Length: 388
Ligand SMILES: [Fe+2]
Image (cartoon, rainbow, N blue to C red; front, side):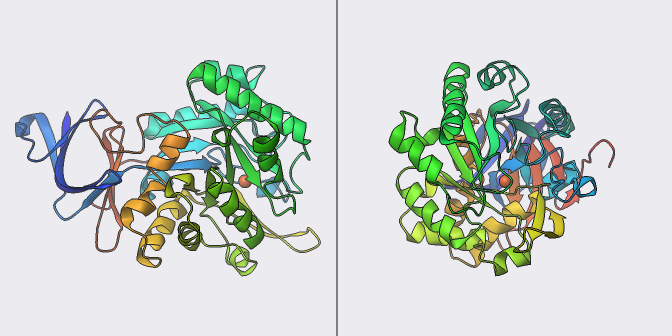
């Protein structure tokens, strides 16, 4: 069955005016004005007065759960499909965090495949916070070469009391493995780097650029908005050609302690002259949000949500005056390019049929289509996870 979206205002994410979209076989077949197909061959969605934008890419989600930083009872649950749907998220990149022991690559891959069967697109990073990496195959290069869903390594923790305190050489070796495996497999081979509050900040990433032959394309540091000092380092790093990722899941206490809300962080990076193509947002969904006191004692722990991703983009438009097409890039075309997700992040014939229809007045997610299937229509949920 074909799907015909009529009269949508297209942001591909650049504004392209009014167009129809014909969808079939999970792909966008045509994007042009006034497409006509006999009604018996297709379902028609009237998108007059709606913006059609690429489905959102959330490049850092603990899809099988994470946490555990306050003991077993604080292990977080896995990602329910409906959270992705409500959030307009049609592609997720799954990762493991602090706990790479009770959670492992086999489980991560199984959860990714499950979400795929349920209706969204998934990829994964190999490893977790600690080095040496615990991959599924003997090496990261082999994970990249032989496991389709693996696009890189991570989240490898640096500058954090929860990291494995890797040496610079150990970190450089992982970036090198990602480079080699990425080249051989035709994938991005990106190391997703978790940055903590430690004073070393981005030091190891700067040293990679200064002391090795490896490039900034091989690393995507995340949580860059977590404190003012790291954020200032992030501005300099991005102006030097690096990519930076901000985390949208937060707690009021994090913001009180100096975390910069993503919308404001985007405004400040753009005002500082950072190339808007260098910035991505991710939710850290299903990751734990631990609140430590100054003695390192856990005070409170809650769970990140993928539903925080798009509201941060909406806030950037509504409160920071950033054009919709610029703000959308951080969750569409930028992650698709940086992570080499070739059929994702843009609306064009031949791309995967992942799209969201937004109400232009309040920027609410109205309709969600993933791999050509309608998962939400006019605010009504049409799909659920297997056990939801
Ligand atoms: Fe992290």
